[in-house]
Image (cartoon, rainbow, N blue to C red; front, side, top):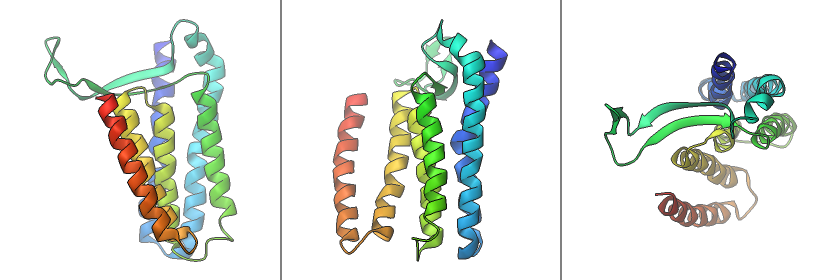
Length: 200
């Protein structure tokens, strides 16, 4: 089923980066439209995840009978090869795919982010643009964590998810939000560094 695999892997990658569509629009337009743009943008990965899930039930389950992941496709990132010999020490590829657990985590992620943006309309009173732009970047980071099948790629998306979380705590928290944001940054910096050392 290479045709189906390529098609649904393309949908996976479109779903992964689709939250970024709304970020420049939110930053360019006025604050009142930021809410609507964020909600509409979050519906795109939700619809794509539902489409991927329907394909998973049709083609992916059969693909998992012979392979550990469904809709898997690898793109050369760093460490490309020449005549079968690696050019660099590290062979890092952009590999995405799903299995029986991650497909449900992806569905849950896209649904929860859409609901979070919708229900935050009445509670967010300031910094609309920053809040909704950071939330969409965070959605991309979380989706990347569940879709990545390369450890370095997983680490990159893990870090992408941490950065907006730090700023969201800083702009949307309570009285001690700056203190909490700095503490969060320091803890995750140390933990991420140890994780990177372990991966390498």
